[in-house]
Image (tube, rainbow, N blue to C red; front, side, top):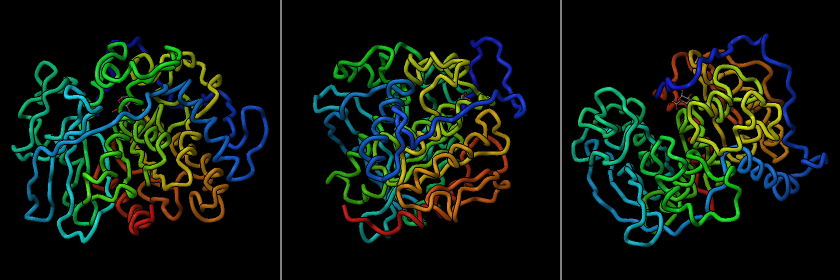
Length: 422
Ligand code: GCU
């Protein structure tokens, strides 16, 4: 994981629960005009749209309408002793010859006797960091500097396979799932340039009638890329993956991204947030660890400009992050935290799931399972996974580990195993 940048002014995070200022969370089941949402229909037709609009306006920003995509297969190879077919596919944002593109790295189990469910997630260090095979092309784009894996914001040979731990391809494929990953910088390079580079630059002109302060930030751009990847996975060009059974997954800033992708695009069949923290699953009003003010200072390009109005002023936000989780209802959602990841506020991530539970129940699911949402955080390494909202607190650091993946695979086995009619 990236560390925080050093150009921010001194910031002492609070980790003391007793110092949290009293706060009241907005109720996802109360409309802005104060009326109650008591039926699934009212949620689907009115409140859900209202909340999405609020998150667009105040937090992530409005994105352009979906562009046309086209795709080009770049390579195909049998890997893992013949257990999987690995391919590289370029997906273009637009039909023109010079359209911007992102490269999908796709693994599909060869034993499958039909389209498989799959995990789709962005990666931090390039597709070549997933697997050390030198036939995967080194990504030519911009990289945040990170030790010997980069040189002057370009990736190096030393990056090959460095993120293999986070992407247990063999395990995923052996369990019958496909895996699709994309370097997030293909969609939008992760630095502040006033929202001009990446697809902001390429597609920005098509976004009209939106106040400057509410235009899409980088998280929204990355999520837009995930939706276009899903367009491809659902197309005839990709018969080996069942596009109706795609789980979107992400770690940290890319967990914030998977949540926004899942909230804004209901075609994602399952959503996984791994250690997503502030601006992801964690409740903003707790202001434990990383705060809205801090994240907007360190990473001014992640959210829209309007989100700055809530720096040290979280209670003025018309939404909080449990409502982001609620936008995913009734689809399966898994939120995970790690004990040593205090910066991301594990308790705030857990409480967010708890407060999304009433929406899941209104929509006729069992939410976090049993009769009511749990009152206590579970002990480390004791997943809550009986219902349609899963949660675990893993022992250890801010990371995406095999333990995390095993929980997601088990959860996917419950919810994505059988194909659903389209
Ligand atoms: C920083 C940032 C977090 C983010 C993390 C990451 O720590 O403050 O909000 O989740 O980077 O993406 O690794």
